[in-house]
Image (cartoon, rainbow, N blue to C red; front, side, top):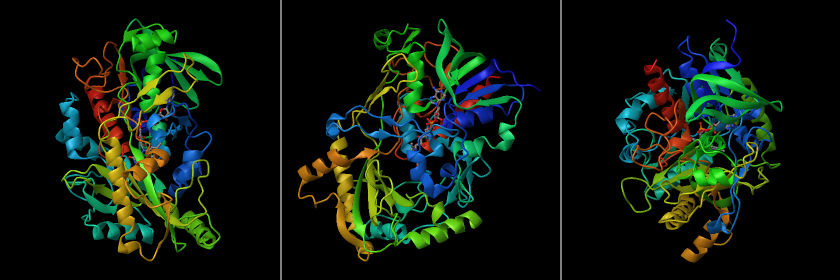
Length: 536
Ligand SMILES: Cc1cc2nc3c(=O)[nH]c(=O)nc-3n(C[C@H](O)[C@H](O)[C@H](O)COP(=O)(O)OP(=O)(O)OC[C@H]3O[C@@H](n4cnc5c(N)ncnc54)[C@H](O)[C@@H]3O)c2cc1C
């Protein structure tokens, strides 16, 4: 059967965590045609598939969008680097592979905010459906799904020392952060299959899926706007090799550009806050004030010590012989150090001594180098901490009506509520853990902060100067009830005020989950795919 290149039942704009899943699930029905658009190239680089090359993926020239935020007033007016994946698999092709779902309470909170049908008992089956769990067998985990979830094949001895250090500081050991509760320290599970990254593309768009006659994948193709007939979505305008073309969607357009690009494309299509659209010279199709609002992100503070040994990861002469041996080992066995995702262990804690955590740790047996110099030559250890449920809310706005211009990203970090104090308390707790006896034979000198803080004012100065994104933006097309005028989509991800148009990705989350955001995004796509298929 030939592929129709102009008309499709569904057009999906973005092949990231959500888009890859949706395209795969919808084309399970052979009489449904889907066009999956992706602005970036195919995902054929070693930097994507070799876990330890994550830094190369994050800083690659063409695998990501290289966004920067607006100057952040609470962070000494710094503009933070915001990598977002731009290839098949989207951000799941450049992320740190940590598999975390968040807490059961997070989904009850979504439901309370009007995301009907997203309570814990509703979403658990979709986490399980997506999952191909390699080691844990219980009611929380699934087997045989597209997303492979594994134990790490290699754990650095310093990452193991972190778990002991956390326990020395009174945190319980937790062997499954996706089980009954998150509190404690332990090894992370990762989205990897046989020592290679299992991105959403690797999982959902394997060769068999890509060969389906009813799936057309267009890479290096920018969706520039959703074509609207009044309030009805009828297709997508694309730009390919400098040329514009219109594609017709017979049933629906599904926007899956992620938390930055989904509000951008809606606004470029005339869906968003009317006043802002008019300022940009865009005619208003649907006045929806919540588009681009409610931006939330996890902000990360790393405390670090230089190391006495060459056990940590660094680009040093001392480490070179081992790195060469490990590279050869990886090529032949897909085992060893190159399967490391860097953030091998971590955990969750409460800065208030409560049962539910308010911070998460990622331990990295390395000194994370300064921005622009991703390869550190210094050996050392870093403990990252972030506030799970920030109060601060930011915005995504258009800079112009040109789809190739980056939108204005303004997370307004640390501007509200408890965020600054919890960030400080988390960093203090992280320093305390690095000072535990388990690291006595490794700790050399304090590296970040440079001087031991004497009081909260010193900590505040450090946090404002050094914190960076943990890459979890969400919420800019939030799901909510019809009565909430700031909600952008209903619980079936249909855009309020528009017809035949959905947004399905991390942007629809009404509130951050207490954890990393890839698995929850895929869960949303799995659930909405079922809802769409049920309508056939
Ligand atoms: C560096 C980094 C590390 C991370 N680490 C982790 C981790 O360890 N664990 C975890 O759970 N989460 C992690 N995350 C977060 C997680 O990967 C994301 O939350 C998740 O992938 C978001 O999925 P999405 O579908 O919303 O967007 P994305 O996966 O970003 O997908 C959006 C896709 O749409 C494409 N696109 C956008 N606009 C257009 C357009 N106009 N036309 C065509 N295509 C378009 C993009 O190129 C992209 O491929 C990390 C993210 C990053 C960037």
